[in-house]
Image (tube, rainbow, N blue to C red; front, side, top):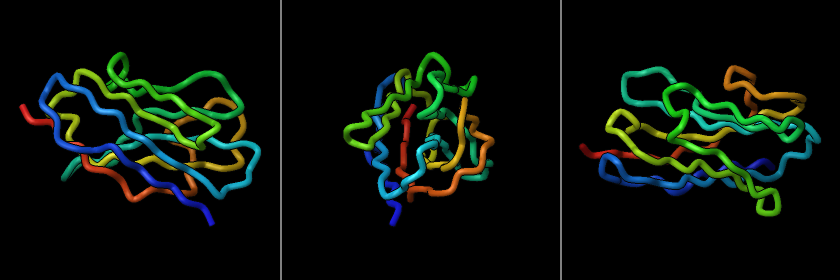
Length: 125
């Protein structure tokens, strides 16, 4: 059984930082991608960042480039999203997702098969 679990959300003041974690386990594909997404109330889901286990590059959306950093700890089956210089518009539910059987550079527009429940991030101004 596949498990995708996010943690690390919370309330932070504008300009502050948070680090989200995503523990993903139970999938057996040799090729996979993992992405971070967010959805604010009344807005469409936005793809923020992704990594691939078959390609070195990491993708970032323009809205978070230079402020957010995605990393992975393969030994812990965990990926992280370090979020710095947070703004009120970063307030959203943040989710991570796993796409299996995908080889090469990732895209947040790829099909993701397994999703976590999400974690709330609230940035106060």
